[in-house]
Length: 166
Image (cartoon, rainbow, N blue to C red):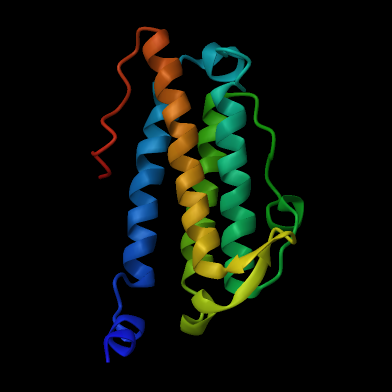
């Protein structure tokens, strides 16, 4: 009886998970906004990548991951997005971020309920349950945003509150 109860109880709905992730994305967007233009693309500590490169990784994973989750097809970014995939300005990076946010919303709405429990090879190589890949993308965003917080603090800039996801 205990196993049956656990396996049929919904802890979080896909819509709630999306809203949680989008809350994190709103905070990460504010981190991008907080950077001075030059430091966004050049500043580094201890050999870590500039925050613009970390943000580009998150954008790439958002496009590819949301499409792959929805369809089971793991396409390259250039197949999914026709805009500038390597912006050189903060405004361009924020536009790319916002486009990824819209795309995530579109793709998420197409995910069939049973898809979350299917096994798939995310990005063509990381095999596991689909829900696990989505959680990884959220974890990866939090990790890289933490790096951005370190950069901002070292530049004397107060980062946005991590808990303010509105």
